[in-house]
Image (cartoon, rainbow over all chains, first blue to last red; front, side):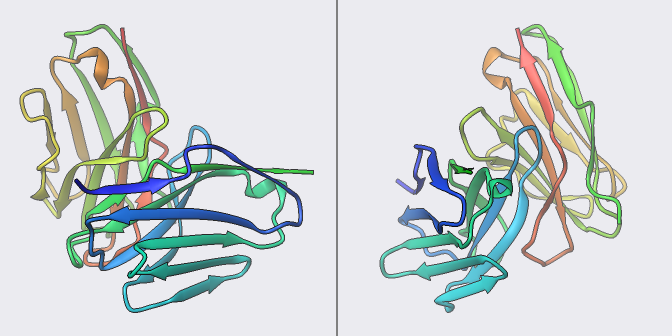
Length: 113
Length: 113
């Protein structure tokens, strides 16, 4: 069966450290993968998109890697801040460009002072 | 630019009752999505519209859920009759036609008693 797995346990890190979140998938060949941030009581907000032929993407303190051989994406937040505390969702397009997203369950990140 | 608007924000109903949710996408966005997000899970796509036509409704429980987007702008999602397991947040998202980034509304939190 097709699966998208993210760490179900919350990730607690200290302010200033780098947070690394993992997204693993099976039985998909996605055209691209996206990362979203979701705060309590709000809808997801788009952060980054990485395509199947890209290895790495950066945006300010965010970095995403995509390894289609391992079927894994890593999401890094450097110099983390308490304001980065949220749930982070990965999402895959499995339709080869049809923009139909399948989401993982999300990982809750808490950045402590 | 105004974001995706949804109403109501909260709704409590009893099982077997009917309920409707409304979504107004970002102006000019041709593609509209409805998602169901159960507590602790990622959003699950229910239906995708391109203008006023249905692109994908393969995960919509059609015996009780219906959705329409009559003029290619606003959309309504209806549940009739509701079951306890329909308790969830219903998210609406929109995107510029053919583009990957989706913009989400705040969601409607439904509780079925």
